[in-house]
Amino acid sequence: MIDPFAAHRPVAQAIAALLHPHAEVVIHDLRTDRIVDIWNAFSHRQPGDESLLGDDIELSLDRDVFGPYDKANVDGARLKSITAALRDDKGKRIGLVCVNLDVSLFDQAIKLLSAFAAPSEPRPEAMFRQDWREHINLTIRTFLEKKRKALKALDREERVALIAEIDAAGLFQARNAVPHVAGALDVSRATIYTLLNAARGSSMKAAQ
Image: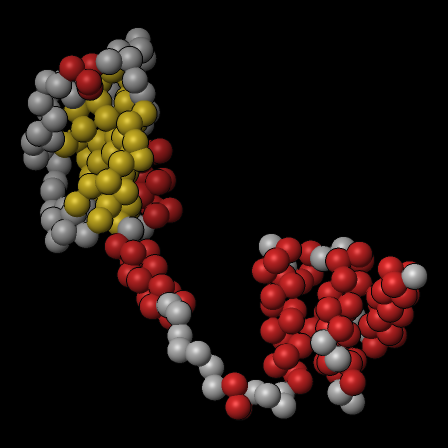
């Protein structure tokens, strides 16, 4: 007897191998409502088990992809799933292939990151009042947040504006401020002096 799922099985196997062990891949036979094959079977199902798809009209419609949608694993873990229709060589729908991705590890990671990123207590200002490096760092961070850009993405005009803000705060008066800012921007000290001259030049023109 010709295996109607022979052409689909290698694709399912490839997906299962790529996402092992975090994705369960299942081929369902719509004609028998049984599982034909299953890989990475963390749902404890096996070939021959009932698919329990029933005869819902939705599964008979001319729709080839369902999802992604949420499911629950046998242990309650959250799964993100997607289902695709399988057809025979005449185009008739004969089965479904389901990919169930265990995203519980991502959920745990999100909770962990959220805990670390949660608002902290106000910092003790007395510890940082004399720390010109921290003031420069905060000025850079505030500038980047305002621009919604990464430091490396700033163009020359924006770098001049950043240097102008650091200068306006009087932070270049510190003896090692220039090399500190040069290191932060990953440029030479000469470049910082050039940007500083441009910032002060612009400030003078604006004042005239």
